[in-house]
Image: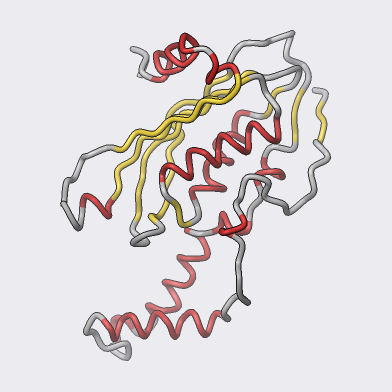
Amino acid sequence: MDAIVKPWPKGTNPAQPESAQPSAARPSRDEAEAAVRTLIAYIGDDPNREGVLDTPKRVVGAYEELYRGYRESPSETLDRTFSETGDYDDLVLVRDIAFNSHCEHHMMPFTGVAHVAYKPVGRVVGLSKLARLVDVYARRLQTQEHLNSQIANAIEEILKPRGVAVMIEAEHTCMSLRGVEKPGALTVTTQFRGSFRDDPNEQLRFISMVRGNQR
């Protein structure tokens, strides 16, 4: 199949705001583990207790995985496209993309699904790349609203389609396990760009496909 690698600079994040760029040198792993030991002591436990002795090492290792999005680029995720589409010019929708993220206010998890659609112009991107793009941004400290707009921005800026639609549905543990303690409450956010933004019928069509009876 004919494929092309788009000429976007490697390692860049076009949809990442400057506020997300690191402002100071990254601490060492030893410093990060020391910070975890401090937190263990702060909550009233003994960081030298056998059961938590290796916890700082495990936490830092988990953080490397949970926040790997800071080391990944949307440009590299979406840079490979394909032209053998048979003149296909309708929307492409990937539904129910499961993700895990962390609230930037409390560093508590929020989980849910993203529904991502775009209208290609001449070329399409591999379907798995849309799911990978969701993870690039979800694996960072986030708000759901920002996550939604970052996904839409990246697709619009990199693929330059005729339209983009993104819906996210998620449950936030900072709301279900603390504070108001309302488990099961879902937050729904949407972003429409291009032809989806300009045509309410296309928005309705997208939502109908997401909510379709085939779920």
